[in-house]
Image (tube, rainbow, N blue to C red; front, side, top):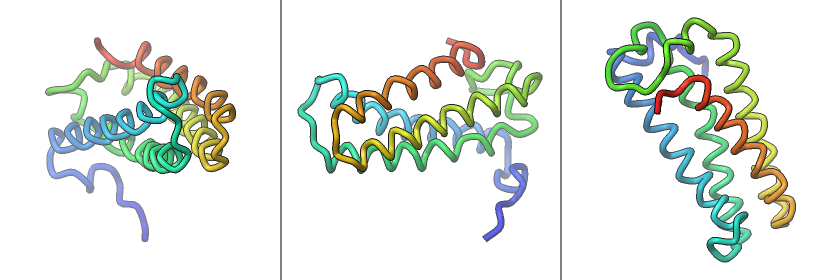
Amino acid sequence: MMALPAAAQFAKPEDAIKYRKGAFNVMAAHFGRVGAMANGKVPFDAKAAAENAEIATLMSKLPYTAFGEGTDKGETRAKPEIWKESDKFRAAATKMQEEMAKLNAAAKTGNLDQIKAAFGPVGQACKACHDEYRKD
């Protein structure tokens, strides 16, 4: 299956904005569940950690097709820098995706120490992008 250009995937800019918000929310929810275990807030469950890391990793690939033309306006916290510095923004997204994939691999081992070690860099990658490209 070939990927369609981003513009062809969404009928209106508002649809793209809703899509990327949804993808980020689902990713954050599942990443947070792994984090709760990594931070000792909930009991460690290897199966749940692996399942949640897998979903977060899959979701990490989705939002970026939805930053096309016209999606800088409307109900969004995206800063204009996303479109002005698209190479830097894509690099930040890629960094997060790479770190998320490492967390996913760590979660598959069932080893809490490995999960803890991989969790922090994902959070740092998320924060770096938010600090640069998301309005509070």
